[in-house]
Image 1 (tube, rainbow, N blue to C red):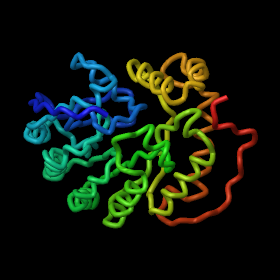
Image 2 (cartoon, rainbow, N blue to C red):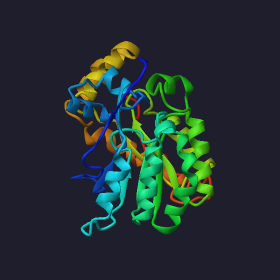
Image 3 (tube, rainbow, N blue to C red):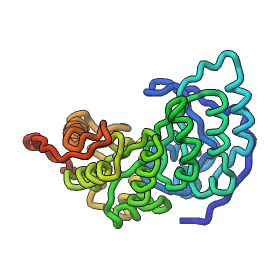
Length: 298
């Protein structure tokens, strides 16, 4: 991966209104992400800066140095109704440069001061640095931390997510947050057809999540929007060329057909039941296998 360049910028707004999603507001202290996940749906956001979704997304990072001050002004407005805000929808708020700038920490302090609940999506273990404030937000307002984990296989991890913390490290970080009262769990996402979409891989992640006290297990299947699809197909050409034809058939648009995605979601639902991943208690009650289930790309 190329060496990252960081550009300090001042933002005009901190909160972004989100439409047609399960949440209404998002916030991203950075744009671009050095994690360099080849499947990242946010790669296309660099188009707004006339940059590409390939190396520039993972090597040119915009740092919104004034975001905490702007956020405090927005949260102090009488029109703000303390909606839950999701951090990490277009970049990881705990990518390595956060250790220097501490913007995510400052943002969390603003949310706590203005009594606003928060959810975080991350692949980083750096989030445990803020365990104290996350625990306070969780106790007083509500706080969820989603650790994205696609696989525990070290070879696949290095191929797919070259700049991220090892999956086992993320699991230990999640466990530490749960221990201090944060509602933390695993997003088994995205599930990648032909690569991570096997029953063995999905169950391995689910089992590890339960063993590390995950409060929940969520999931989704890979989607390939504009820019992301082009980048990911280039990755496949390099690493999995035999999958290219199948991917072109499976992804005529952004999403796979329901006939492919629904059996995968059904199987993950069974894993949620098997490991009681809507609770902290770890059990191994058997769940029936769906008939004729194929999670691998044909």
